[in-house]
Image 1 (cartoon, rainbow, N blue to C red):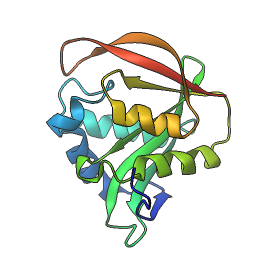
Image 2: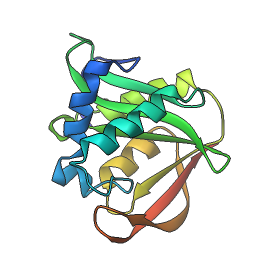
Image 3: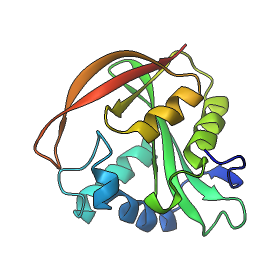
Length: 165
């Protein structure tokens, strides 16, 4: 991680952000790193339906990650806190052009301050060393492993399960 990550803000998701999220989520290199991807990353109708559900769910905290220089326009990703099978979880997605700048690490730290519930869980594809570093820098510890179906790849992938106490 660089010594100084760019200044970022977490803000409410605006309708205008969704186009950038869609572009991020269909980048083939980024999709290959994520354990949780859409069956068809190019299906805009499914994407829009998914985001409508997320944004309407009062149990989901979802934020746009934006550069502080112009937070209305400089969208670099999104981050969320949700409950799955009774466990609080975090997840994030950063546009590939912003990887390696410390943005995800900073954004996760900010979200964890906003949503102080503990323990909180996360999953990362075993091969996604960048995401594992983001989680571990924020205090997450690997507590298990699992496999999960990657619909875009049509096969199971190895995942690591992490927890922040």
